[in-house]
Image (cartoon, rainbow, N blue to C red; front, side):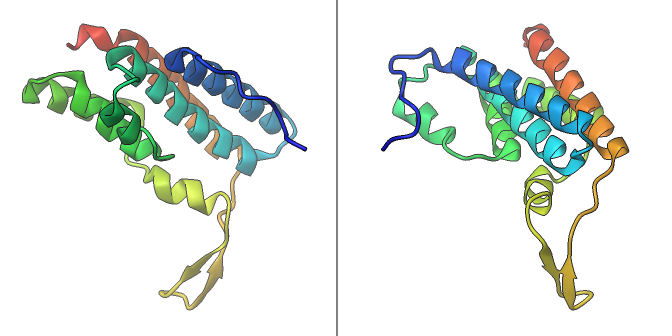
Length: 160
């Protein structure tokens, strides 16, 4: 028995936007139940999908190159690709990169956070396993970054 049914011939940008909003709603629901670890995970998922939605408004999703560049499930690779395609001018790419790091996403290593939210990790430094403790303040910080990202993506055309 199959679970779900594929809907074909969708607008990929719209699909990513819908999924991003669903992830954001899931995060809000989980946070309201004090499930901050899972809420933070879904905020990161929403961030990635909002970026991919924007990317697919800027490039042709039917071209193999762009499909392949968007196969990862990494917020950081989505950011890198957005910066790559936003302009052919290096000064604009540098400005977008700077804005994202300094004012939107911060210096968080999202790939590491993504894993640390889901799994215990072994530390050679301490020679033991650790698990990330997540609290309401952490969720609030990520949620603020998500809102900043949404505004940034909405106004991105002003930088180009």
